[in-house]
Length: 82
Image: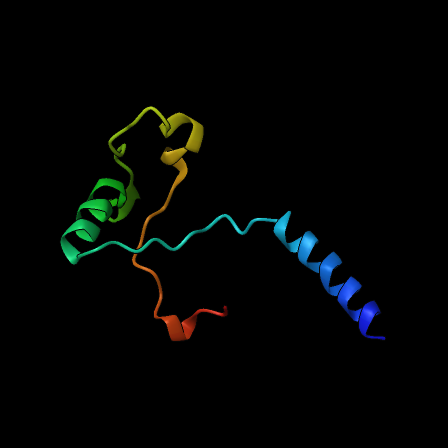
């Protein structure tokens, strides 16, 4: 019974690892750095609609598709299902 449960667990874990959620939580050393990152990526509000300005690019931007990113403060840890 235990071996069967372990095998089922392993199979389920493999499935989960192959299906990314498309999100990440990033921690910075201080609020100033966080504010800079948000400023670089955040949407600006223009006449009631949202538009995006392009974030600063790097050699990895196109590979990472940073133009498709939405960057916000993370939700309160109590509101995240870990």
